Amino acid sequence: MEKRQQLLGPAHPNTLISMGKLAITYNMQGELTKAEKLEVVVMEKMQQLLGPAHPVALGSMQNLAMTYQMQGKLTESEKLQVEIMQKRQQLQGPAHLDTLKSMGNLAALHLEQGKLAEAEKLQVEVKEKMQQLLGPAHPDTLLSIGNLATAYLKQGKYTEAEKLQVEVVEKRQQLLGQAHPDTLISMGNLASTYQQQEKWAEAEKLHVEVIKEMHKLLGPAHTVTLLNVGSLASTYQKQGKWAESKKLHINIIETRQQVLGPSHPDTLTSIEQLASVYMDQEKWTEAEKLNTKVLEKRQQLLGPAHPDTLASMEDLGLAYMNQGKWTEAERLQVEVMEKRQQLLSQAHPDTLRSMGNLALTYMLQGKLTKAEKLQGEVMDKRQQLLGQAHPDTLMAMGTLALIYHKQDKWSQAEKLQIEVMEKTQQLLGPAHPYTLINMGSLALTYIKQGNLTEAEKLEAEVIAKRQQLLGPAHPDTLTSMERLALTYIDQGKWTEAEKLQVEVMEKRQQLLGQAHKDALISMGNLASIYQNQGRWSEAEKLQVEVMEKMQQQLDPTHPHILTSMRNLASIYQKQGKWTRAEKLQIEIINKTQQLLGQGHSTYINKHGESGFNIPEARQMD
Image 1 (cartoon, helix red, strand yellow):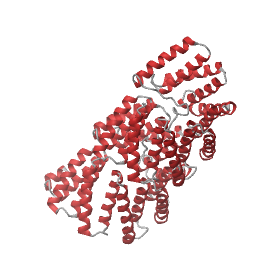
Image 2 (image 1 turned 90 degrees about the vertical axis):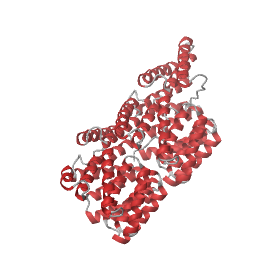
Image 3 (image 1 turned 180 degrees about the vertical axis):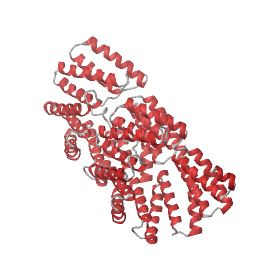
Image 4 (image 1 turned 60 degrees about the vertical axis):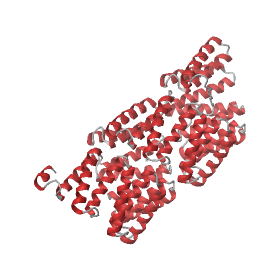
């Protein structure tokens, strides 16, 4: 570039081409500010030299628009991309290939902005014109079909998305062969579609096949190979295969650190994905450490308001929330919400997700009025934006029902939960994991209303379907078994409750380890069964172990620790050990005041509150 500037001058076309190539290199290295600076110069000089509507000048505008998009400057990017599309329509016609590509680029941006209807409309038009112009099996046509499938996925239209993805895979296999890079990419996309539908076996099988071919074709360190390895790791993670997932994520991190450097955006993304595995395992300290590291580097590299920076803040906020660090969680989540409202809009999916996370933090602190107001707003906006039956809308309704549950508004909770359950059954099927989660939530509401027969019936159905779908030792299966055991307790069916609870505890200890939170919760529940049977010695022994192991792992004021202390104090009281009981109760009061403030009324729900899933937690796309 420097030699061309000296030889040809700073405004010569060849000099500008060199500057553009250097900007692309900066982009690939994650140096977006440098790339933007160069691309602005290239675009302005190309416009002066060739005219604002020349194809080369429009190409330079497109490069700048993409850099803006990568920086999270979505408004600036949209303005340029609309201008590019309109000029190409005027200059080259509405059905020209370059025009259609610019429409596709704008549609992709709309997806990122949460303008889902606009994105789908553009992608449908692009696909139809591509088919007319190039034929149904042309590579560009197939790319447009894949992009439309992505638009459907974002809207929860899984059936339509899968149908299109299968079509793309089959046509590329016929046209290009099984091992062509484009075929493998489409197979990976289809696997991701299966993953979003929680068809784990199909997703895993495809991902393994794709990675095997990618290793041969591109090598183990190629970007596309690593993306597919990451998708397989995510599939393992969602199935509870923590060791396999962690091993793959660590391999990706090490490879990217060597190839791209420790601060490259892709390296930071892979570290963030490992942190999400730790979060799913409830290893909050490890997750917090990694999320803090990613956040600090993104703040330095991208700035405090970049979408990726805000995503890191969101993840760190969730790690705080799950450790009972409410103040830290709330502070981060308020900041994320406000910045997304400014950057993206009040109704953007990311903004609504951050509002939902903050509502959950309010709920967990007992700030139920604030939680209800905020979550009601999330639900209303999702209904307007996505429709009544979209998965994200149903998730928001389920979370609002949970808040009603905490407020003892049983009729409102039941009404919402029945609606959510029926719609998820229609949309996703009767055995889909999210359908089963909502059946379990409805069962909890029935329990609080004293409708134990209906609760038991629902919980038994959930167990049967999870055993078929996930296996008898899967964490979700064990959670549903534990909930049924708690229902047996309420019914006074001590033998059935003990049998189930012992099975859950033993399987969790084998699967997760003796000191895992879920294993300890199972021990605590078994202690409660012993307590209700008057088996004080056995109950005390288990509850002491639960409390001590909880104290080793969690913040001293974490709700799980306070619950275990309350349970142990109750056991001491029943045995007449008044001094021990009093000592614990004073400690509980002090810690509760420290956590929630003077005068706060604490509500402890024995039916799975401590094991409750955070439905608004961010998922990697």
